[in-house]
Amino acid sequence: MKKVFILLLLSASIHGLAQIGGENTFEFVALPQSGRITSMGGSYISYIDKDLSLALQNPAGLTPLVDKMFTAGTIAFYGKTNYGHFAYAKSFPKIATFSASVQYMSYGKIKKTDEAGNIGATIIPTEWAIQFGAGRQISKHYSLGANLKFMASDFITHKSGGIALDLAASYIDTTHKLCATLLIRDIGVQFKPYVKGGTREPLPFDIQLGVSYQPKFLPFRFSLIAHNLFRWNIRYDDPNDVETSTLFTDSTQVQKVKKNTFDKIARHFIIGTEVTIAKVLRFNFAFNPMHRGEHAFQNKKSLAGFSFGLGLHIKQFDFSYGIQVFAKGFSAHHFTLNIDFGSLMKKKKVNS
Image 1 (cartoon, rainbow, N blue to C red):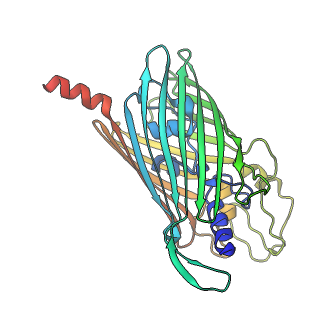
Image 2: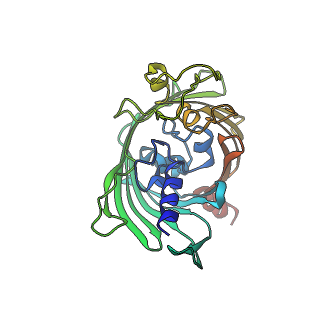
Image 3: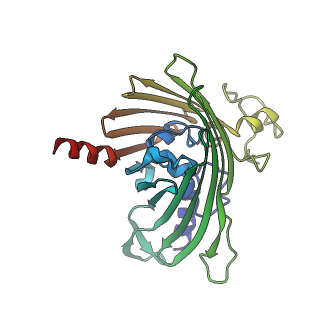
C-alpha cells in the first residue's frame, strides 16, 4: 500500500510547472488553470484581459474586467488522472475585485492492497484547494493582487493539509499594448504531514516575471516568462545518462556535459505567442525548454516541450482548448469555459 501512495506522490509532482524531481508536496496547485494557460507553456502571467482563468494564476488580474465572471475547466492526463477548477469573481467599486475558486485533482480508481498483496476495496485518492483572491487597480497602469489557498490531500491512509499565499503586481500599458507581471507564488507551509510526527515538506514555491507585447497593427502578442528566479540550476542531471542533446537537435554519440550553461539559462524561460483574429478566434503556441528537457525521450524527442491551443469568443461565452505534449504518446488536453454573467444580466434587463 505504501508503494502505491509513493507512486501517486511522484505522479503528481511530474506535472507541475517547476518539475524538479518531485521536491515538493501539493504540486497540483502549480498546474495551469485553463486551456489558454496550458497552450502558453504553463504560465501566462504576462497578460491581463477579461479572462478570469488568467486571474486565478495572476491575482493582479483581478480587476473590474472580470466582474461577475465564471470559469470552469478540466484537463485529462494519462493514467486516468483528472484535474479541474471552477471559480467566480465579483468586483466592488472603490474596494477590490474578489474571487473564490476550487481546484481538484483525482487520481482515478485504484484497487486497495495490503502488504501481502491482497486486493481490497476500490479507492479514489484526491487532492483539492480552496482559493480566495483579491485584486485592486491602484492606478491607470498598476494593479496588485493576492491569493490565499487552503490545500488538502486525501490518500485514504495518508492525509495532509497546507496553506499558501500568492502575491502579484502588474503593469499595464494599453496604449503601447505592453504588460508585465511579477508573481511570488505558494508562500506557505504544510501544517499536517502525511505521516504523524513526520517532516513537513516544502510547497512548490516560485518567483516568476512575465512580459508580453503586441506590435502596433499586428494581431500577434508575444510573451516571455521567466520562472524559478530564486535558484540558478533547475536542470536534472541523471547519473545513468551518458548521452545528451541540445534544445533543438538530437545527439546519440556525444558524452553528457554536466555543466551546460546555455541549457541552465534556457530552462528558466517560456516563449509563447497568441494570435487574435477579429476578437473572436485565438491561436496559441509556446515552447517550454524545461518541459522538453524533462519529458522528451533520449532518442525520440517528438514535440515534448511544445504546447498549442485555440480559443473561441462568442458574445458572453469564451471557450479555450490547450494541448501540452509531454513525450511521444503522452499529452494533456485542457478544456475551459468562461461565462460573463454580468453582460448576460445586462442583456436580459434590456430585453425585458
